Length: 321
Image (cartoon, rainbow, N blue to C red; front, side, top):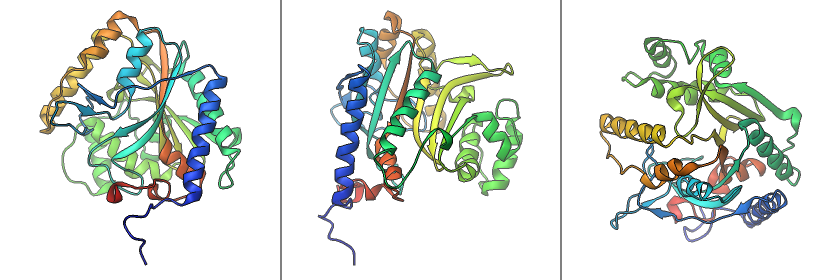
């Protein structure tokens, strides 16, 4: 028998585990002298990603898909290392692993390389896992691969050099999808439908993404001479939990990417968005070299507790909110 809709879907144990996780996160960053900050959830601009759908309000403001833009403005103002536990919002994302309203832990470390940030992320996860009865994570449970290594080992194509036609052919054969997509959409389709289901169990760190997925990350050459986006993603048992960047600090390049996103939005038939000029101005003023990362705390708690769906750890998911 289903519980009445007024009741939470998360158990008292899950609610208590969330409170304990937040306390541990705050203690971890306090010890590391990382400042907790708070930024607006309602802003005049929002994420430009052509495949994200923000909530826009009649007052002309947007609910944020992440606190990234205002946090970078703080970094440019001289804040030093900062973190935030924040609500975030994305339309049309509802499933066992998605909720349109969710909770992010986001932090930025000026002067850190992406590898240093990865080490800090894993240290936090090992600390949280030490209090869990459902998981046992240590250094022996971590697999590190580049995006190309993982993609090629499963799909059989190099994501940096293969043709669009080759990607489309393999994707159509593997998924049954028969439409036409841009290159990065073919990559995303293969990653979600072919690669992720075959990822190793435990913690997987992917690095060096295709340049078309750079978003707000810097681009550099890898050891084989391929241009790659300096990004990392953390998966737990094939579920994406964290996304980090060696952050782009070039204001002109960031504005060019925003304009390209708007061009793609036009192609996709979705509304174009105002350019986040406050962020562009902050980058022009001088944001320090920084690595930053966002962690989905609902998904992380789900994994720490050995649960299978977000509704087990969210009090009132979308259908009951």
